[in-house]
Length: 141
Image (cartoon, rainbow, N blue to C red; front, side, top):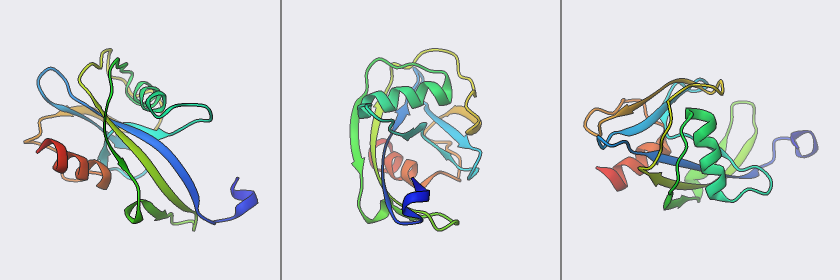
């Protein structure tokens, strides 16, 4: 795609999931590329619904499967316009879901994570991804 349009802005649609365990702790992944902590998630694939994207990304990035997702918010607007260091521009639209029904064994199996763990809301890492920090502050603190 970038060969055709160069660095012009692309609209990128995706989803992420705030997962809570039975202790009320929230799941965060530390990403390889930016070293920050955030919710599991990623870009929608052709033909997927937002819910399917969220469930697939959750499984790919954490090894967990969830049954029920609740839509919290759709992030869009100026804050979702980004230019990468290589000049590529994107306009993101991200559906944010939450669940407390995730099950399975946590594992890093996609090459996108350094670490995955549950944190109490009182003891979150300081280097959160902006989107995750916004959602935690607005809905969970």
